[in-house]
Image (cartoon, rainbow, N blue to C red; front, side, top):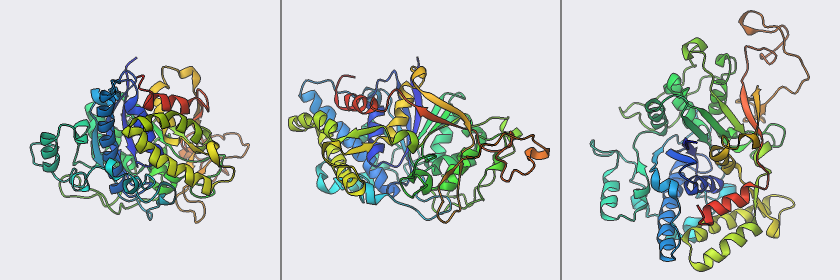
Length: 451
């Protein structure tokens, strides 16, 4: 089976980094990462970029250390397929920016840049990586200089782009056959909403969009009803979910104006996101969104004791990766103890929200019988509620679908919830190969050196 060819849209915080490492440490027969698209989210976009570049820096050091120990280097996917990295939205479409620094730390990784500065890539380098380059190359002048003078630079593992993330997405989707590129979205959906608005027909070429976000029948993690990624840009989430609908206009949020976006390359910035074209202009296509909400991801967790058992011998042996990951995960475990009842000692645990999506991309098709997907759910996002913004709303009434009248309206049905021609049709993951299967698999793939 051919590898999953993916775009990963991410706001690198704790579990985002674990998801990226899972992808890059997997077999190249399982996955090819074409683009890492950076968005604001857990922290601001620049700190997210800093975390990503530092991750590549640590990977480079880890490969050197493994060679010195006579171990396989690992990271076969990353070595075979060099991804593009692009920076996208710095703010949500129409709301004040929400942050999760209270959980992830001010830098997004539990203060690791202060506690372990030797694993952080120099700011004067990564800050300049994505400035406008010479016309003959996608690399910035600073990046070219680094690559030419330092073959061990983390920049040798990726290609920095000066195009905004949503434009890189559209380029990749346009350059590849329809139905061959999967988008894994593990942060706010702003970049995806911008891409879909820029070129709706091209965006609809995506094979699937795997979204970590939302909370349906469980409490939220950012408010009592909202999951963080959805709360961080509810309008963007609503726009992406609307593309699953037979009639996207039926669930579209109010038109919004982006606050701070990168230039499109011509010095122009979009000032408004228009409604999508009519369904017939999209050739009747619907976006294949598979949602991985807190209902599913919360119960897939990594315990402190199993993490320590795997990484402590490696830290003692000198593994840069084990030391770096342990630094920010230990800070996260401590935060979990302070925030939640019932957390403590070796049983303290962190939910693997984002890695679940990558796990599905790795084995979801080859082991299809081990995954359960609920089809066609009308899941909508509240974009304006004072207390309920970011909430995923579903119809909990035990009502039959009605007979559609003109325009898809059902008599007495406010909001089109009972119409077969209105509302969203989101697919939702409700079952995996096992709630306790992911953590040991993730640890083995990232730290086991067996791949």
